[in-house]
Amino acid sequence: MDGITWSTRSAAFRSAAKLSLPPSQQFHIRAGFGSARLWHAAWRNDPATVGVVIGFSLPTREAVDEHYAELTSAGYAGRQPPFDAFWGARYAIVADPDGNDVGLMSPIDESRRTWPPEESPAP
Image (cartoon, rainbow, N blue to C red; front, side):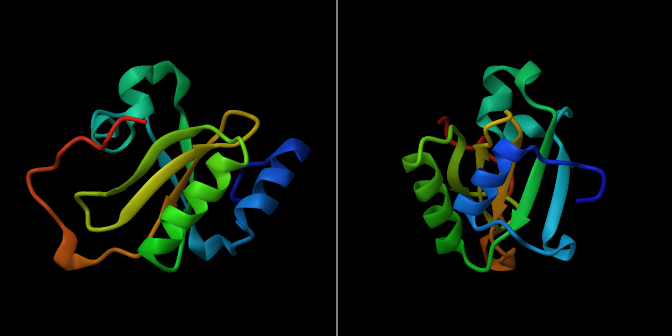
């Protein structure tokens, strides 16, 4: 995964999350910058707990909600509930067992872009 190695504990998470996507469908976001306060509620609460978000593109907006619900029901910590992000995608974040933030993002829908950006909902 482009320089990021997940541990064996995280393998169960990836399996539960069905996140065996090719690198072309993965994205990585460094959350330590000012705009993270808009899209990462856990960063607003405690910036020291956030580094990189390991992101995955999902096929639909509904898939973001479904993956988030399945993972949090399985006991993984929800770090950002699904919401309609200002850039036009549905977005959520769940923590894996090693504390890595894993972003779940739908395709961007230009008609859903909003300005000015608003903060994402709290977990």
